[in-house]
View (tube, rainbow, N blue to C red):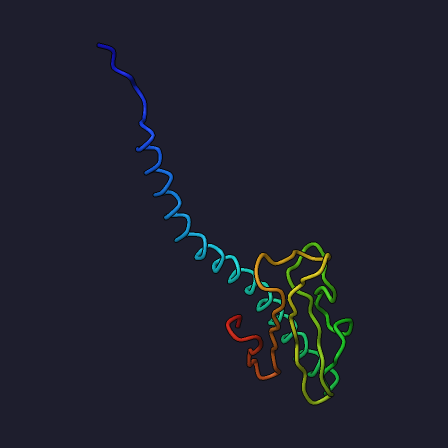
Length: 133
């Protein structure tokens, strides 16, 4: 009597089902972790903009609404190196730094939702799109 070596079809089907269940549990967590890392980029650069705005205020006794006036290099428009574009707005007495998610052809495109906004005020208050900040 000859004995066959290998797996049966039933065993292979069980393995495929178990792998599918594990993937369905792990993938949403992975996406959340990746998105959290991308938002860390925005928070870091917004912190650099805040520090540069405070230094500008010490020199000129007013805030600026132009990234070009700050001594920090940040992308004003979407490009291939960043997930966000950055802008500064405000009057001489206050400012709001904003990071907007790149969703077009330029920049690193998101794998999930299309647009997020993060705001940072002079007092260091972080705000923006709910669920993202």
